[in-house]
Length: 434
Image 1: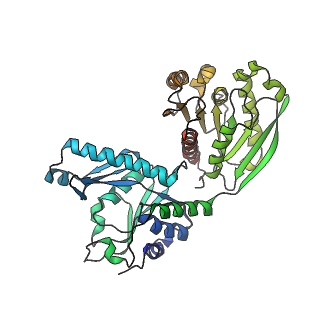
Image 2: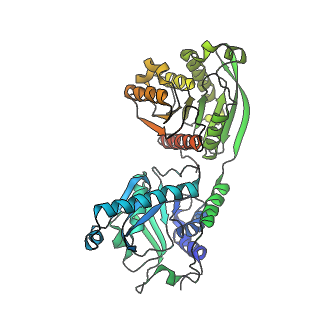
Image 3: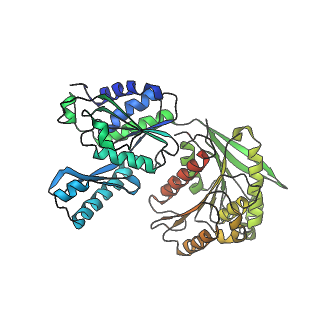
């Protein structure tokens, strides 16, 4: 035996990866057994920890025999030789895939909850398991990570059979193992304690890493002078922020909007700053005409953007807009200004039709998020998508109405927004904390 348990294996593996300390790396553990190993590596390298979800596709009636694997993002790896030799039909294969895909989704919800996955684009990613036997799962994991934009992939395991790297077909850029014995029957033979890792331990490992890396947020009430009025706001900027998002509230809502505050909190935990402020004064908000005055609201947003750009908290940081309902129209209108400095826009249940004349001028990558049950607004957003000339995407939250009040709907909006801003802010050369 080489290891007393998975934590011991993780510490030994971390020693082999010490050269990565201080670099922008992400550690991904394969649930369940790979996560406590990966947690030790993440601790040693002071790196963010996340999971890489893959599921083995077992041959019907021989579930321990892998005919392939599934991964997040629709990644699919098949072993055509096994499928042929076991005479698995397309119908049987589809049934196994459907079952394992459902399990992938359930595990993602169980382990991450509403929290977004750690962004991988442009980063070095270390994929960790408690050992490697056939290599099917590791191969699928590497492909999942590559599909998510990783710049470099390192597959690291405590133990694997002699010559194991040949099984990966070059999917990993680098491979690391503590031991590669010639006599290899099963991973468990090299552990004194190889008992099953419970879900609770996986979740505890992830929560502990997130708590250790949670950014310190400076939260301040601010007064924002724009044209002939002064607007009230709340500026929250995490330590080493990766960018700042300005919120444009809709339908006369204020900086106290519970839905936008919930989204802002998720962005803050992901290392992004937020500015929630009133687009209208209390007196102006009583006049419903102002709520639909897109040029007025866009002008206020542009003024707040200029004010924020001049503050020390935002020095060198990319800026983005998050607009809701009519506020999304203001965000798109302001982003359509040729001088706009914003790097990304997210619209939640937005009214892009109110900014139709500016949509073709928007240059910042734009994400439109609409509830699947919000038929009228969904149609408006589909039309707007055809008018946008920038990088764009429409994401539909199934079953959600205009206010995203359904269980889990607003959390999905927050996850989508966080991923969109993190990805496009990183393209500006700023590393977003994880």
